[in-house]
Length: 207
Image (cartoon, rainbow, N blue to C red; front, side, top):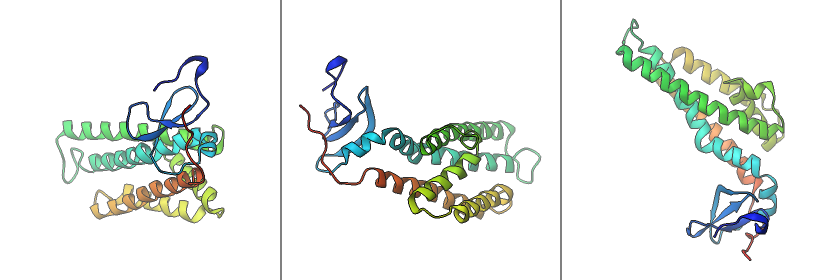
């Protein structure tokens, strides 16, 4: 099933045009990546209203967090083994690893920036600054979910990231600190996603 032209139906949940046994969101112009299995209750009206934010958080959870933190870990590791250090790696390997790490971080930073723009409803300086947008997303999601000040969580995450960046070359176990932050960066947006589309209705039926 495909929609086009003036006969396209309104945004909502419809059977997946690929033929898979699941629902997929039609945005009104194209098919989204958001899917739900048949039989799963879906809040279609609220989801459609929040679709840009839902898509941004979906990308953040699936790609953004992993890219930023994997890239940071790879970059710190490459610098720790740069030629001339205590345990040097070949120059070609160190350069390649650092390039991949930077590329991953840039890719993830763009996803964080888009997510923050959707969370705040506008572009801000915080969304455009790499690293800072990670903490601002954390603060914004925390505030939106709990209604409490996010200062404690943001400070804790900032300290853990700084500890990893400063000491991981000498203390590899500090990679646990980065993993703790990454897990939180996935769990909190995931919880917000569940809040944005709770099971209170049924999918749109095709006509």
